[in-house]
Image (cartoon, rainbow, N blue to C red):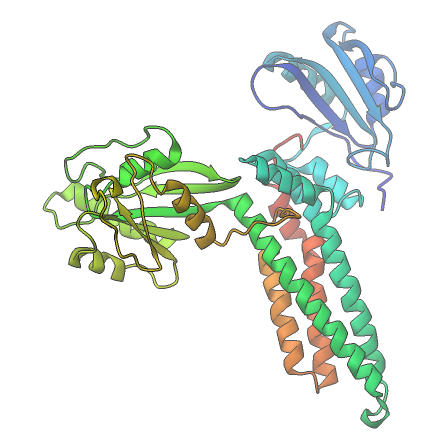
Length: 445
């Protein structure tokens, strides 16, 4: 519902620092007064108006373009004025202060987008995708965020909710009749609707997991004994010399982190200290951090010396891995084996960090092990709270199938399923959650 009255807010909408153009955005019910004071008039709606931006004495602060968007046909659903001037830090500060002196307050982080949500311009999933689009670190993540902003994720959720409502209506109608009066056609339709919803929800959850990978990335730990080539592999994967390579054991004393991307999926590679017995206190501290890193990893690569094979020490390291985290044995130094071929296990691969042999296959195996799947339609961006809501919805739907012969319990599980899905788009969302979500936005958006 469009809010006719609201206080007026303003903020710099462009990034910090110097630039060719800087934008001050104002939204709220006091736009006319601001425009008359700063521009001398209210601009023609949706037309670029060139002129001076005036201070309280009528002198020019800057010169640029003003754009006026009357509500509800604006980003926030309110009257919006954008002042596009030069991108100097001092100039933008003066212009913002001028606006704030006109009964306007500084916008809170994400407040423009929050008003767009409250005015039904976008739903909550779309609002979150605005921040995700800004923060995207890969082109694929940016495309996925744009899909969510265009409403692809929301449309899927709305379709699921509509089908749930149809099923709930049928179930509620069946509750009003004695069991002997319920026709076979009703139970058949009920079972078919339930099955369709289960399939669609499972597909949505899989797509959301892909979108979560694009947003959050995955943490991959490089582990192994000293001098097996962990730092060389890190350099090979990142395409630059980010880690010191040396024949001296224990060169890497701390966890070295490097962000890379494979087919648009952001990966955080963590090169850890070599694991061995040592009397060096600093080296032991590095190895302790290695074990801590393993607990936070999404995938562990155990790097091995291909010319030596899997040693007893390697077996001990492998046995120390958390059971719930996938791993891959990576036999390095394939260039030293000549014509000799390794008999590899299903969870192993042979590479050469020095020559690049097997690196492309390693990249593909890494993507597969973290759960990435190629999707022709493309993934939509998803957050941790989306995954939590979808998982809870799936759990309630599973519970519903288990109480199918108890109509009252079945109806309640369907209601809970719908509630979790509605939380994704913001139809039922607590105010404290809204505050948490929008507080992480940048000011001016």
